[in-house]
Image 1 (cartoon, one colour):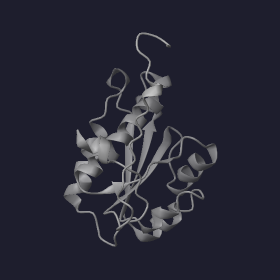
Image 2 (cartoon, helix red, strand yellow):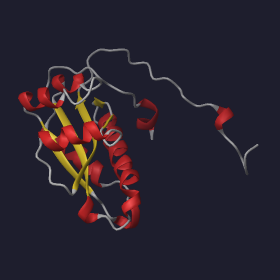
Image 3 (cartoon, one colour):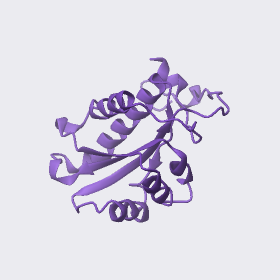
Image 4 (tube, helix red, strand yellow):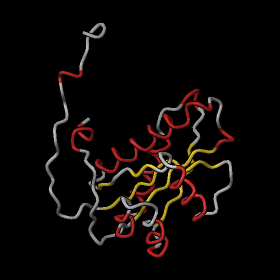
Length: 168
């Protein structure tokens, strides 16, 4: 799967809408992720409104690119769907990675902005979208056609981090 090796964080986007068909493929990729005992805790908010994107871009000092994205996905877990409550972040991580890999397949780019890593960002998203208490914001992922930025992908393989049959 070449998408794994082509994927990189994209923070600048062309001023060009992402087609509805591609948005649906991205949503399908999210929901195809593995999850603990198939609990599928994900809920997704799709944002294309420029005013809302501008507000969401104020989530943290690292989220400014959201304002210029054509579409941003908010991935959240529904606590009411948790059969294995300790696994929700793993489930949502798999769903977020699926979104980013499908974006590469569709010649799009995106960047993973963690919200579950901070109570402040979770609360910001919760308030902005008036989320019920059972919805846990996990990630915000702006997506778009990459603006002509550095297209080099860095090979991150490090054989010193591989251990066979134990810690050797």
